[in-house]
Image 1 (cartoon, rainbow, N blue to C red):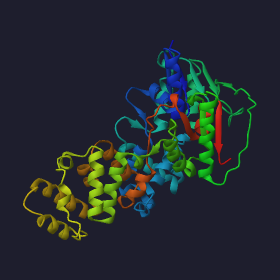
Image 2 (image 1 turned 180 degrees about the vertical axis):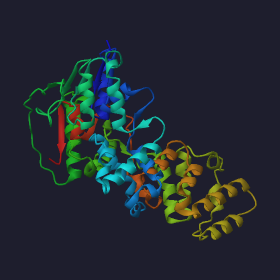
Image 3 (image 1 turned 90 degrees about the vertical axis):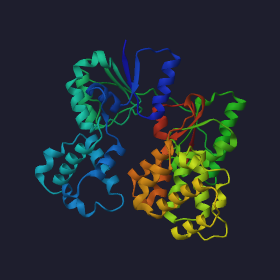
Image 4 (image 1 turned 30 degrees about the vertical axis):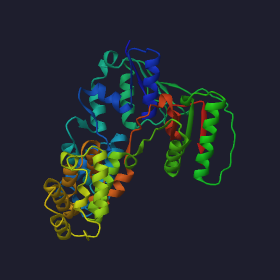
Length: 431
């Protein structure tokens, strides 16, 4: 029998899928609220995410923005405008109905209409997806079966009409991790309060965040080595992982303990992120021998385009140590004075210098030419999330999913993520 379980986070999704596979739970579909709505709406559609909306905002012509055009060129406008639209869609607001009030409502309605037209094929606003899903609610017995919201605490208003419509055709149960969810369950939805436990608490005082992380790993190692607790029963959490992230991830490598980062790992920590960061450093700070060497070497480790892969092992001798290479003219002169051999390598390095000299205005084309695979995708994402002049900062903010399966590892997560997929042994940092 087909059934659908709705979870609240990526960690909860991976845990639920693994558990269903272990239990041979055939017919169970694990998804999010957005995935549930998209599954009912129609095939090949999905809810537009933040990246989709930011890209669409960047394509909106200035004449559509009204007074917002005065700030459209400021750093962060795309992110702020996208965040406003996503919040309005989550709240189920009809911006067109509010446009008659004039002022900022009219500008937001115009921006909303322009963004909808600019969204990529298959990506639609949440409000549009839920409207289509409500019209198709009668197909729920075949498409979704009974729906169970498992440890979902935040229910955006846009989903409440959909759950109410589904309750007319299938059983809808909501198991939150708070005894009384805000605003109560939607009509027709059965609420299941969480089981009450009395945990054993122990308090530990530490000097600073790194000391807390060290003590957390000592605690985790004792559980695994002395009490034979499996790694998938252990979690280390914080209200917000940011202040502890660097210490926890570096200590996990030193301790040789399996650690799954639920919020992902910094993209620049991997070879693909290093290649993108090296190219950003080269473009933002200009030509130099050291920066060029770093970029070419990291790009080749990450799977560079053919021009860089074909460079001979001794290509670096074309860039002499004593030559000043801070300008394009000096770069070209150094390459010409390096001898008559290695003509193909000289042509590649000359092209690299010319692209770098064009600066941030040519950043997107430079990334497309000199990066490949995941590094190129990270480059595109960084340019979508911020201006080219802040490429290094944008790359530092990007996180990529952790490839280590949480089913066999200690979890490092925010407290909210762990609440959606709890574990018996938890160390809470910064409490």
